[in-house]
Image (cartoon, rainbow, N blue to C red):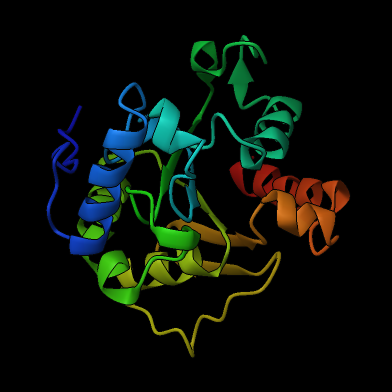
Length: 210
């Protein structure tokens, strides 16, 4: 297996993010409070890319999309479409992702959940390395515009040419990029995203992986 480049646990590429990590280490010394690495099957066909770790989610647990509401719909849908083995709500870390892997465009918690452009650019090397390391990769799911734009940049595309839109699909060589609104509690509460809308995205993914 190709070695995957990951950020150092004390990564200092982004001054704002490093400062926030230091503050959270003082407030919550038993939390992860470090860059969050990817999780799942490196030999899988599907890569899911989110925005960034949540304060009480992956920033606490060290595993993408665990510990907060954003992961609820995601993991339920992954289980529904057979991307999870041994799903256990009481201990998400015991779940085995089947044929998929999860990462974020930005590996550290950003203030107000809003990374700035330089932080997204600094983290792009890790996203690029993740994509390159997944030799069986066929499909990437972008959860939200930040993830979409980060992926487009990695592939050398332009935002004007490849616009974000829910359930949009683009082709990059042998890889399909599919967009979805982020599965955040806010988007679900405002019904910008519904369970049915999210399921339809995964139906499209399933068709592309057949």
